[in-house]
Length: 334
Figure 1 (spheres, rainbow, N blue to C red):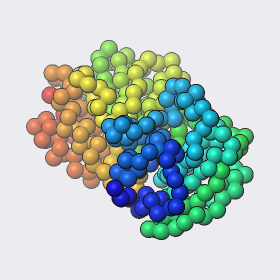
Figure 2 (cartoon, helix red, strand yellow; figure 1 turned 30 degrees about the horizontal axis):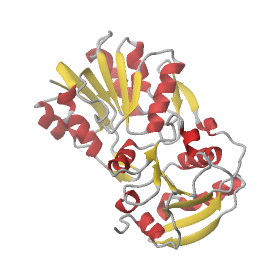
Figure 3 (spheres, rainbow, N blue to C red; figure 1 turned 90 degrees about the horizontal axis):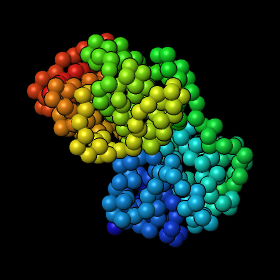
Figure 4 (cartoon, rainbow, N blue to C red; figure 1 turned 60 degrees about the vertical axis):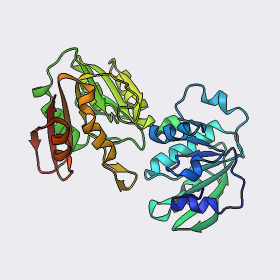
């Protein structure tokens, strides 16, 4: 099988034995998934795809990971992410969990900022050289070392809506409350009464919706495809002394047949730099199967997004609770 994505095509042409290497933050590519390495990712969909092929895959937040690492791995390829702060965190994490001297390659598209790794590595005291360039991608190589910085330092907190929110690079809304979520929070009290109802926060991000709902007495389950977001939500709930369950999952995959009185969401529509309506479409179209009779879906979205047609298909109708020309808050019920 040949590589499908440009960055993997660049790696495929290297005269190097990648067996046993870690692929960190990998794209979806059959050439990678059919190989003999292991995926390390915060993306539940990526991990699920690897495991479906019987390949090793894990999250950096998995319990017992340092013990499983043992003496280390032959080498690591880090796919440089859209969020440079997330890329810097990956570097700190790798330096913390793997032995000094472990070979490291960094790969990415030129337009995605891969060339910034030269300055990042220099700031960490790690040497670097360019190994190859092709397909508008670049590949650099170095070795891991002790850098004296704790990856925990990447976590930060801020105040919003009377709550302490814990945030991490690469998580939606990192370090601030976005305007769409603010508009959603303004409308929720009118349609979601306080009390012990089972409520699902889908795409929980830093946990603002989960914490806001839990503070009003809801029994909250929070789900996100991004393991960093789930960990941020857990920390946000703990920072506010609130109860709730947060789990990693690709839309409803981790929920089985559970049903809720309400589902609330500010669903994503980007995958790295590309627009991707797939997760939001599944959120809407499958929502009736996860709502109790009389249950409701309440979401906020950019006004230009094509969600009205999806809501009509799934529920047979909907209402607009708010529209400030940038964002709309939609409500549909079973």
